[in-house]
Length: 572
Image (cartoon, rainbow, N blue to C red; front, side, top):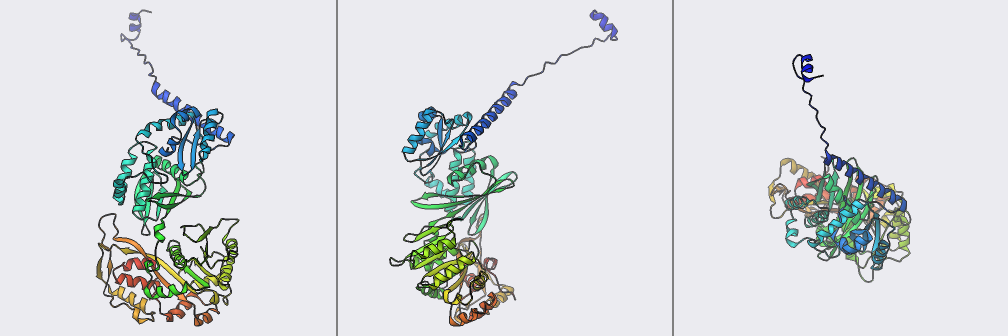
């Protein structure tokens, strides 16, 4: 049919047919194929890891430590198809492409001959290629000394404020390199130490991961990590802490040591699974925290003088009570260092050993073979003069500790009770005979930690009428009138300087104690309540924690608000 005829059939209008050639997006398809091949590669590596019993890892998700990378020269690494990616002391994590290459076996043997404890991981070819790329970075990555932070003095000083830490993290994370995570982590630890933080918290949320520091006992928001950076950071923490990278559905606990200015600092790591990822808490055990004398604990002079006598007794027991984080262990360690002498044998049993004390034998419990009860019985066979039991948790430990105190040993230990008077009913609840307690227990004390005001910015304010009534009620039970406050007209007030400043700086203890005497011994035989014991021992004339705290607020060392938030106040 002619074109003219076709046009006539269509009413004179010539139809126009346009054929559209489909545009083939080769870049997108190539990207899809590449991703598919990479997934298949990682899947194969995981299958081989199960076959050979070697853990699998992905070095695109894990930071490669520069000091570890240096252990194996680049040429040797490529010949062996292996790379070292993490180093903690003599523990070396090495990623392998295969277990069947002769050069790989020779390299592993050489590392072991050099004294390294090698932990092997299986990786894909892609992962290995990414690791080799890090050798290019060694030209500018400086080598750090064993266990120390690779942070200059100028950077370290800038990290002594929260604002400085935030700036540091922003700048460090803007560089998209996995090696940079080691730099980030070192900065976090250095800043936490400079700020005297006791804990570092990482808390995954729906879209970000919140990092908080516990400063002076209070959690403070510091930074929000995006998820990818946190996963890299998490892997770094797990490796350093000796934890399993591929375990994400159960709790893990580990620890590692770092050294700054020649001082070794223990970091205890706890990881638990959560809705949006694994939550991490790292507790910083700075040995400087226990390098205190008795006078530096802040104990009231009258109480301190009596305690200094009691802890040197040849036998008996000192029970220190309070909640977790109230400073009980620090106080007991200070007592131990006070009684330590060449002629005195001291053994501790703890869970875990938090600080290492020179000249003292310290042992650590486990869940099966060396419990508090078994360990305490074993310790008694070592002929100690002084024993510290980390905590009395059950009837068996309580009874054994009581017997130790009755048979020529002085025992330091802790209990979880609200106040000093509550220590005795707690022992009774554990099944200890009320008749044996007076002969064994010399001192029952309690303590809390309260924040102190920054001496450079603190001010005073007038006490309100309601506060005066509360203060008078608190001191109404004090029998030693010489300890009464001279004036209650003014108390300390916080004066914050900036958004990140609370007006407080540091913490100090408030204490109370009950000492065994004939009258109390007779009273305890009837197993009285904690409130009845508190009334009975008021005659001894020592301050309660509430009274101790209020005196500090009146002296401008802290605030009433801080005292009342930490210590139970008698009701009107």
